[in-house]
Image (cartoon, rainbow over all chains, first blue to last red; front, side, top):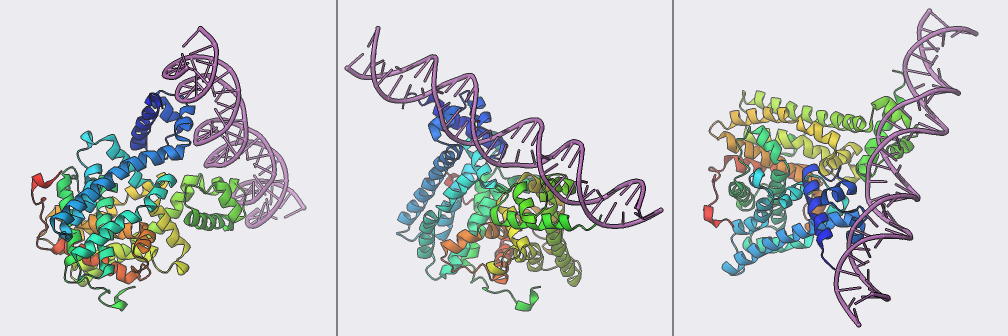
Length: 220
Length: 220
DNA sequence: TTGCAATTCAAACAGTTGTATGAAACTATC
DNA sequence: GATAGTTTCATACAACTGTTTGAATTGCAA
């Protein structure tokens, strides 16, 4: 167990480098150079490169997931097991957006790392994300309790669209800033959250989304 | 220019392999083996591996973009330079969704390749995507003409959310199917398009999205 | 047929990658 | 202060990568 110093130096260096340059072109040699440790230290402490990446990603995403569930639980306790849909959606997308957006100069390494992880998709991270379904089911449950009249399918689509807007905004934040010539302020995280929640709420509550295209022949 | 046979054999093999196994673990040697040609043929015909990938992606995405613009132009000509927002949004997300979703067994190689390209993010493709902004501006213009009362910022956010829902649904279609235990039918492409368009239209037309979070202190 | 360019091919190249090894340095316990 | 266990280190390994080379082959025009 000892000092743990080498271990955490590697974690910090790896997070920084991956955040800055992406998974694609950061090698173990880059990481150990940045951390000032020996090459073999990575395999000694983590087993393999993939396990290092996985450990980084897991620790960050369980933090986010815990925060999500904390907000969800608080909301449902408030409303007696039946929270307003806006609050549920806010618990779903808020922690992620708060963790990844915000003024660039004061953006944490962890935040920038998570942005990378959502842009590039590397095997160890993909594996972990696939296990996220159980976590999402808890939100499906809360949403169904909140909107008992809504069909199950609509709930799934609403959840899908909420996550879509949050993740895409994170992932393409640079492009949106460029496209809008800075008019969309991605640093105002609470505004972004409000927009996502607002649209997702409309999607879930508007007098039934038409389930079919206006006319089948209109399509191609 | 001769027979072109080798060239197109490489393109076909590469598209197939990338579609099936992703960019990460398909080597030039895999491609030439599948195509039944010599290793050096790739560099001879395409210059480099990246240029091969770029050519694949470019040819597919200019096809999609052309279709998008065709639909957009048709819509604006119908409405005398002012198309209904639903039709504009349909022109924006329809071609992409039609190109990537649909019954898996009858999904073309090109479709599966484009799904890969939207999941993994490899340098040559990223470079091309960055040049997509000019293309999107044409939609911004049409949307502003369609909704002259709407603020510019709201237009950008609406566009962002529409693309978000379309791309995320493509990218995470497998997860959505699993999460909903098959209840969300991603093979019914026109239904998916209708849902995306419907929500995006609400986002853009609903009595002004609140521009700010309910209360600034509610955060964190 | 001859000549010339375009194409194919086997082979090698040069570089990088993650990982393994075994000795050395350290640390704490007795 | 010797011992046992942990950690560090330099170095080598083995495999794989995209690319290049130069000779062989092909196809076509004169």
